[in-house]
Amino acid sequence: MAKISFKPGNMLYPLPAVMVSVADKEGNSNIITIAWAGTVCTNPPMVSISVRPSRHSHHMIMETREFVINLTTEELAFATDYCGVRSGRDVDKWKEMRLTPVKSDKVNVPCIGESPVNIECRVVHVEKLGSHDLFTAEVVAVHVDEAYMDERGSFHLENARPIVYSHGEYYRLGKKLGKFGYSVQKKP
Picture 1 (cartoon, helix red, strand yellow):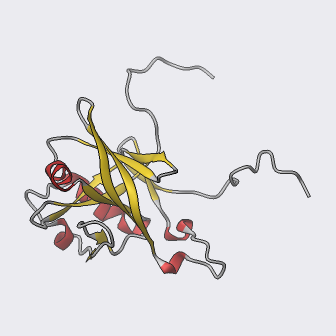
Picture 2 (picture 1 turned 45 degrees about the vertical axis):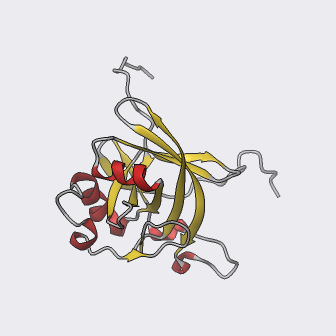
Picture 3 (picture 1 turned 60 degrees about the vertical axis):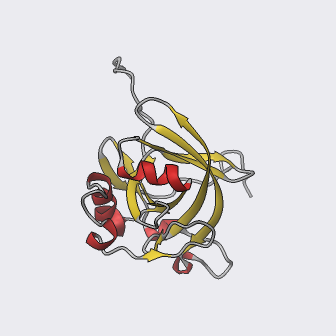
């Protein structure tokens, strides 16, 4: 396979497209769409998000040191894009996208009711990197929509039709190809 040299940049795709809800100390809340989000640690459970300091949500996270990562679905694709291209300085994204703010258990930031998974987070470290600040946070609570639970108590996010982001476009996830460890699993 022939390859060409490409300019240095972030080519780690696809990425989860998540809506991150935030609030300031007065309780004003906003939603920002983030593709630069990831898992950092298992024990304690930790995640990270990267946010430009110029974004309206940035100062809110800095004030409260809390946020909620809300996973997105095919049904939420339009709202996901809208919350990424419109500023909370100018519009109420909750109202415009008809999203439901739901009180969180551990943080003073609302969860998005329509999201199948809400991950409540408390910031433990902020690192200024250049164009973005990296917020590393501990997961303090998780909520999952019971509609995606089976009778054995297993959660099936795939039934919610999650979406990902790649090079400026949104995609739904495709078919299952295997499970963790299937490459070394003994044949029956």
